[in-house]
Image 1 (cartoon, one colour):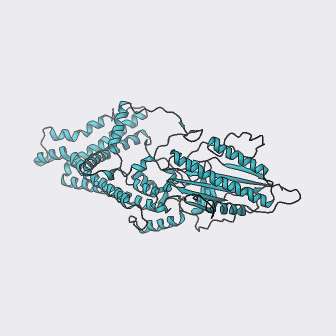
Image 2: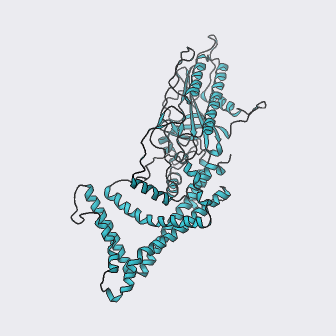
Length: 554
């Protein structure tokens, strides 16, 4: 599957052209005023596992906030991108830059229109500008004094700011003699100036929404092609070329809790198996081997899974195997910011101990299905130390995108009168939102609070795919596929390791018991790890039992 033309790439590109649904926001505000939006704060239970999930799982903002996030954390983020699986970062960056340019164009047009109006009717503009500035200062001073438990002598009540905003209209109707007898022009300007500015802003917002709809329509009709991306500056083009080459780099940062960044929010428990390297025949020594030889044998077996001449089934979809280096995110950032970037060292440790070594060799087995919506990745690591082989398997699942990204192309279906009516109403609310946003900004500054829907502080490295993916696979068939792919790859590795150890003369009886415990946990609990019980009276030990609540890396 070509990541550039995948459904995930297309949906992410569409999402940056999304404009806020102002009508829906007004309805939500009205429900909040009437007290009908209160939802019970119940814990969320996992749909596929016997655990409770922490916090909420709401889709982050789409449209211009998403484009800004891409520009901040991907284009201008770490020198190297977080690995991307099942989609291509470059088209998303290109369309995000176009969305940002259109945002600045919209603001510039509104500003130019305001300057032109002020040039035509300077006195009325001066009166209105002074009234707005004074009202903002009074509102800020009154709220700030109330926050500190005091009472301002200049502003007894913040509500006096609303009265100041009415002063220009009062001046337009009360009887007085203006300077040089320009009564009609000044009074008309004071009366109509806000409505003229509103009408100009509405026209600009109408054009902006129609341009956004045209961009959506083009993506829906033609899809995403790497040779037909939006224009970008020379520096951005060079940066995107680097990202295109390095987004498949074999160095993977991991973060808390035991999650490889960009490999998915749905993280299975670790299958951790300890194998004593004791000879099966006391008179024959165990043959020497290193971790790289074992990982190579696993990779060969996984590559042949379902591909033999006598196989009667299809192989795993979009399957690939590669050796990668896993390292802490802080170390990954330091290495990417180094003056001279070096290639990852994939030689492994051989028979040496991996203790105190921050970067370790992994075998990454991955299959991409559902047009990039579900990506199952299995990271396998082998450690040789103190006469024991420690086999660690870390399954990660990239879950589908939020449903909000699937309906971003809804404006494309609107036609004729319905389209123009929808655009006019939304543009009118867009224009009204500008002054309201200024008023809310003054309120937040006075009260010293953060916006409710403001962006949370995120530390690099972060993943665009993880940010816009749901916490778990909720679709029944997608969940079945993800579980089956994990089990198939793990079973193949277990079988290969057992055969390889027997060739080396290792007693695999304890290993087989631990593998049986892991398989039982998957069948009963849907994960690698669970409260472990004895299987057929066997003394099972050295099997990881940590079943952490799964959170997402963003």
